[in-house]
Amino acid sequence: MNKSTIAPGILCYQFPPPEGKHFGFTLCVLLDEQTKSALIIDTAYENQASAVFADLAAMGYELTTAVISHFHPDHIVGLQALPDIEIVGNSRWEETLFQFGSRDELTPFFPTRLTTEDSDLSFGRFRLAFHPAPGHSACSQYTIIDNTYVHVADNVMTSNEGQDILPWAEFDAVADHIASLNRLRDFADRTFLLSHGLILHKECVRIEAIDNRIRYFKNVLEGNGAYSYARATQGCTCEFLHQEWFIRNE
Image 1: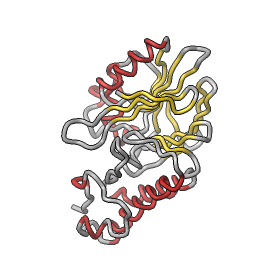
Image 2: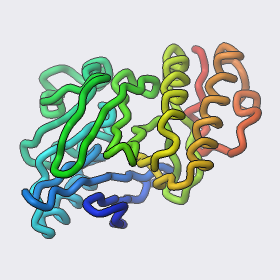
Image 3: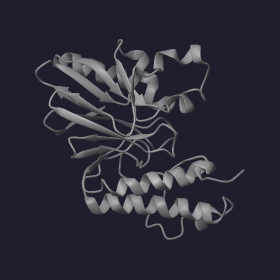
């Protein structure tokens, strides 16, 4: 685990990828100095969540809130290693979560506070706003922190070394993903916080990341999901990792 300070009261915990994979786990934490409480964005799996929880406890902080960028297993399973805390998630959470089991099995992951387009949240001195960003999942959302940082969920992913990872969506959701990436352009002047990968500090890097993903998705749609990987990534300025996630209309 690598721990760094993004800004006063904002920590980043980065974990290596699972064996055979390129995507690690990046967990962002906000600290409320007055109440000694902490908010985490996503939880990864139990090992990662436990490590962050232990480190925060050693610093004298109680983890009270988890904001979930979307309800895929690698973002929520870590909740099982945490105490009973507030879980903040997008109002379309059921469309994603119930793909992975029955209601009874998945009860520990249910959000206790729902977000929509107009939602906001105060945590200590921080102000968070939420914007739906469907595509990778129906419930994906952007979390805006103090109008300075944007947590982008999995709409942009890189390796821990910064190499681009191929974006994923069901073929029928590609148009939604393009719309969400176009919306992300509106926030390109803010620092991007990723669930998987490096913090994107430079605006030119953020814009290039958005453009490459939009270009790929538009090519997928143009070819109706039948293009080769080479044809679908034509015009992109990067070579994506995890090409096994290449989208086909099957």
